[in-house]
Length: 144
Image (cartoon, rainbow, N blue to C red; front, side, top):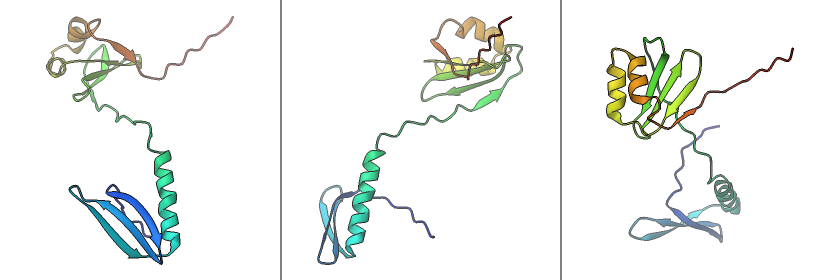
C-alpha cells in the first residue's frame, strides 16, 4: 500500500453527478468549482472521511514534555523550562516532579546559571509561584 499526504483544508463542499466528483474549493479570494471523473464510491468515501474528521475535531491537546536538563544539586536532579507557557519544571531527588506557573524567562536563566540551584530555588521560586505536582503519586498504606 502506498500512502499519500492529503490536505483537504480548502475543500468546502463535494457532490457527485453523472460520473463526476464535483468539488468546491476555497482559494482565499474566490471559490473554485472542479469536476473530476470518479465513481460514486469516491464521493461516498469523501463523505465518510468528513464524518470521521467531524467526530475527531475535538481531539485532546497533547502537550509536549518539557526538555529536562540534569543539574548538580543536592535538591534536584533536573530542571526544565517551557518559555511559551512560562512553566518551570523541577525533578527532585525523591522522584517528585513539580511545575511552577508564570515563571519569567529571566528567572529561568538565573536559575540555570546559579552557583547553587537549591539556594536559588529556595530564595526565588519556592512559595512565590503557583505549583503543581505532576508525577504519578502512589501511596501505599500498610496495616499492622
